[in-house]
Length: 180
Ligand SMILES: [Zn+2]
Image (cartoon, rainbow, N blue to C red; front, side):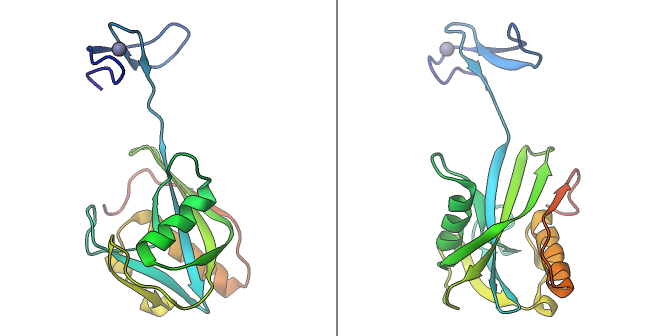
Protein backbone atom coordinates (compact mmCIF):
# COMPACT_ATOMS: atom_id res chain seq x y z
CA UNK A 1 0.00 0.00 0.00
CA UNK A 2 1.55 3.31 -1.14
CA UNK A 3 -1.03 5.76 0.20
CA UNK A 4 -2.84 5.88 3.52
CA UNK A 5 -6.49 4.75 3.29
CA UNK A 6 -7.34 7.19 6.11
CA UNK A 7 -5.69 10.48 5.05
CA UNK A 8 -4.26 9.83 1.57
CA UNK A 9 -0.66 10.73 2.46
CA UNK A 10 2.30 8.50 1.63
CA UNK A 11 3.10 5.40 3.66
CA UNK A 12 6.51 3.94 4.51
CA UNK A 13 7.32 0.26 5.04
CA UNK A 14 8.72 0.19 8.58
CA UNK A 15 8.63 -2.02 11.67
CA UNK A 16 6.34 -0.21 14.14
CA UNK A 17 7.47 0.08 17.75
CA UNK A 18 6.62 -3.11 19.67
CA UNK A 19 6.09 -5.05 16.43
CA UNK A 20 8.38 -7.52 14.65
CA UNK A 21 7.19 -7.22 11.04
CA UNK A 22 7.39 -4.60 8.35
CA UNK A 23 4.07 -2.75 7.95
CA UNK A 24 3.01 0.14 5.75
CA UNK A 25 2.76 3.07 8.17
CA UNK A 26 1.39 6.51 7.28
CA UNK A 27 3.96 9.35 7.41
CA UNK A 28 1.29 11.81 8.38
CA UNK A 29 -1.36 10.21 10.66
CA UNK A 30 0.68 7.16 11.82
CA UNK A 31 -2.04 4.69 10.78
CA UNK A 32 -0.57 1.19 10.60
CA UNK A 33 -1.93 -0.76 7.63
CA UNK A 34 -2.14 -4.40 8.79
CA UNK A 35 -2.58 -7.08 6.13
CA UNK A 36 -3.75 -10.58 7.03
CA UNK A 37 -4.73 -13.74 5.17
CA UNK A 38 -8.20 -13.97 3.65
CA UNK A 39 -10.65 -16.79 4.35
CA UNK A 40 -12.45 -18.59 1.55
CA UNK A 41 -15.41 -20.70 2.68
CA UNK A 42 -17.09 -23.31 0.54
CA UNK A 43 -19.29 -26.38 0.42
CA UNK A 44 -19.09 -29.92 -0.87
CA UNK A 45 -22.80 -30.24 -1.70
CA UNK A 46 -23.85 -33.90 -1.85
CA UNK A 47 -26.84 -35.69 -3.34
CA UNK A 48 -26.65 -39.50 -3.01
CA UNK A 49 -23.15 -40.45 -4.17
CA UNK A 50 -22.75 -37.30 -6.26
CA UNK A 51 -21.35 -33.82 -5.61
CA UNK A 52 -22.32 -30.51 -7.11
CA UNK A 53 -19.74 -28.59 -9.14
CA UNK A 54 -19.93 -25.21 -10.84
CA UNK A 55 -18.20 -24.20 -14.07
CA UNK A 56 -16.71 -20.77 -13.46
CA UNK A 57 -18.07 -17.86 -15.49
CA UNK A 58 -15.49 -15.46 -14.06
CA UNK A 59 -11.74 -15.11 -13.90
CA UNK A 60 -9.51 -16.52 -12.57
CA UNK A 61 -9.87 -20.01 -14.06
CA UNK A 62 -12.93 -19.16 -16.15
CA UNK A 63 -14.39 -22.31 -17.74
CA UNK A 64 -12.92 -24.62 -15.08
CA UNK A 65 -14.94 -26.53 -12.48
CA UNK A 66 -15.06 -25.70 -8.80
CA UNK A 67 -16.97 -26.49 -5.66
CA UNK A 68 -19.02 -23.46 -4.60
CA UNK A 69 -16.73 -21.26 -2.50
CA UNK A 70 -15.79 -17.64 -2.06
CA UNK A 71 -14.40 -14.91 0.14
CA UNK A 72 -16.01 -14.54 3.53
CA UNK A 73 -17.88 -11.26 4.08
CA UNK A 74 -17.76 -9.12 7.21
CA UNK A 75 -20.31 -10.05 9.87
CA UNK A 76 -20.86 -13.66 8.87
CA UNK A 77 -19.61 -17.00 10.17
CA UNK A 78 -17.57 -19.37 7.99
CA UNK A 79 -20.56 -21.72 7.76
CA UNK A 80 -22.87 -18.87 6.72
CA UNK A 81 -20.33 -17.83 4.08
CA UNK A 82 -20.14 -21.38 2.70
CA UNK A 83 -23.94 -21.64 2.48
CA UNK A 84 -24.26 -18.17 0.93
CA UNK A 85 -21.68 -18.97 -1.75
CA UNK A 86 -23.52 -22.20 -2.58
CA UNK A 87 -26.77 -20.29 -2.96
CA UNK A 88 -25.11 -17.59 -5.10
CA UNK A 89 -23.04 -19.81 -7.39
CA UNK A 90 -25.27 -22.89 -7.69
CA UNK A 91 -28.66 -21.54 -6.56
CA UNK A 92 -28.77 -24.57 -4.28
CA UNK A 93 -30.06 -24.75 -0.73
CA UNK A 94 -27.92 -27.04 1.40
CA UNK A 95 -27.72 -28.11 5.01
CA UNK A 96 -24.22 -27.85 6.48
CA UNK A 97 -22.84 -31.10 7.92
CA UNK A 98 -19.73 -29.82 9.60
CA UNK A 99 -16.30 -28.47 8.73
CA UNK A 100 -14.52 -31.06 6.59
CA UNK A 101 -11.24 -29.59 5.31
CA UNK A 102 -8.92 -26.64 5.93
CA UNK A 103 -6.23 -25.66 3.45
CA UNK A 104 -3.46 -23.13 4.06
CA UNK A 105 -2.01 -21.38 1.02
CA UNK A 106 0.67 -19.13 2.51
CA UNK A 107 2.13 -18.16 -0.89
CA UNK A 108 -1.10 -16.33 -1.74
CA UNK A 109 -2.21 -15.57 1.84
CA UNK A 110 -5.42 -17.58 1.71
CA UNK A 111 -7.11 -20.08 4.02
CA UNK A 112 -9.85 -22.35 2.65
CA UNK A 113 -12.54 -23.80 4.92
CA UNK A 114 -14.67 -26.44 3.20
CA UNK A 115 -17.90 -27.79 4.69
CA UNK A 116 -19.64 -31.05 3.92
CA UNK A 117 -23.26 -30.34 3.10
CA UNK A 118 -26.42 -32.03 1.88
CA UNK A 119 -28.66 -30.76 -0.89
CA UNK A 120 -32.19 -30.59 0.48
CA UNK A 121 -33.57 -31.21 -3.02
CA UNK A 122 -31.78 -31.98 -6.29
CA UNK A 123 -32.60 -28.47 -7.45
CA UNK A 124 -29.92 -26.07 -8.62
CA UNK A 125 -29.04 -23.79 -11.50
CA UNK A 126 -26.28 -21.51 -12.67
CA UNK A 127 -25.81 -18.45 -10.53
CA UNK A 128 -24.35 -15.32 -12.11
CA UNK A 129 -20.76 -16.54 -11.48
CA UNK A 130 -21.37 -19.96 -13.06
CA UNK A 131 -21.69 -21.10 -16.70
CA UNK A 132 -23.07 -24.51 -15.74
CA UNK A 133 -23.87 -26.42 -12.55
CA UNK A 134 -24.27 -30.19 -12.34
CA UNK A 135 -23.92 -33.27 -10.17
CA UNK A 136 -20.95 -35.57 -10.67
CA UNK A 137 -20.35 -39.12 -9.47
CA UNK A 138 -16.69 -39.89 -8.72
CA UNK A 139 -16.00 -41.43 -12.14
CA UNK A 140 -17.49 -38.36 -13.85
CA UNK A 141 -15.36 -35.72 -12.07
CA UNK A 142 -13.43 -33.61 -14.63
CA UNK A 143 -10.11 -34.02 -12.79
CA UNK A 144 -8.15 -32.21 -15.52
CA UNK A 145 -10.70 -29.43 -15.68
CA UNK A 146 -10.75 -28.41 -12.02
CA UNK A 147 -10.09 -24.76 -11.22
CA UNK A 148 -7.96 -25.04 -8.10
CA UNK A 149 -5.70 -27.44 -6.23
CA UNK A 150 -7.90 -26.99 -3.14
CA UNK A 151 -10.86 -28.37 -5.08
CA UNK A 152 -8.91 -31.39 -6.36
CA UNK A 153 -7.82 -32.23 -2.80
CA UNK A 154 -11.32 -31.68 -1.36
CA UNK A 155 -12.81 -34.08 -3.90
CA UNK A 156 -10.05 -36.68 -3.53
CA UNK A 157 -10.43 -36.74 0.24
CA UNK A 158 -14.22 -36.74 0.00
CA UNK A 159 -14.49 -39.75 -2.30
CA UNK A 160 -11.78 -41.65 -0.34
CA UNK A 161 -13.76 -41.15 2.86
CA UNK A 162 -17.07 -41.96 1.18
CA UNK A 163 -15.66 -45.32 0.08
CA UNK A 164 -14.19 -45.94 3.54
CA UNK A 165 -17.62 -45.24 5.03
CA UNK A 166 -16.44 -42.49 7.42
CA UNK A 167 -15.62 -38.83 6.92
CA UNK A 168 -12.70 -37.52 8.97
CA UNK A 169 -11.43 -33.97 9.22
CA UNK A 170 -8.74 -33.18 6.63
CA UNK A 171 -6.16 -30.44 6.33
CA UNK A 172 -3.25 -29.67 4.06
CA UNK A 173 -0.70 -26.93 3.50
CA UNK A 174 -0.37 -26.15 -0.18
CA UNK A 175 2.96 -24.50 -0.94
CA UNK A 176 3.07 -24.81 -4.70
CA UNK A 177 -0.10 -25.63 -6.56
CA UNK A 178 0.16 -28.02 -9.50
CA UNK A 179 -1.87 -25.59 -11.54
CA UNK A 180 -3.35 -22.17 -11.17
ZN1 LIG B 1 -2.65 8.65 7.16
